[in-house]
Length: 97
Length: 97
Image (cartoon, rainbow over all chains, first blue to last red; front, side, top):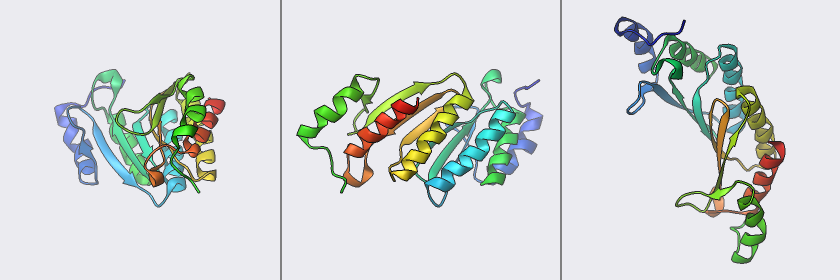
């Protein structure tokens, strides 16, 4: 079962992400990051790799793309905030970038 | 050369789009449309097909995706507003949806 992150779980899961370019989204229990790639093909290619993992894990990002820039917001709508799935997908996104 | 749409060209190119779900974006010389698909795979699959045409024509959308919803904004940054390329890409997007 996916659950909202407990107070104890937040630090260990979120601190490494907050040190690698992720920030808390304004006014939401969500994390966000903007990735810059070399061009559109690299940006969309990364999105495509991420999309396959997102579907495989049934956990999908909110994201926008303008040419070589992709901005991502991660949260878990089912629990009304951040869950361990968001941290997992964030780490995968960083690994694929 | 890509040029900003002339007053004469706007109607014939934009009117058919404005009748098929496209609207003018707030405060910009741009058109926007939100597409709803059956699920994430259909939404991202459509984005992937569009992405290949966008790259082929060297004309890229601003777009955002949340699960099965994709919102697109089209404008031509090089000319500071709408060009014929935006209408061409809009028609392609509708054709692929």
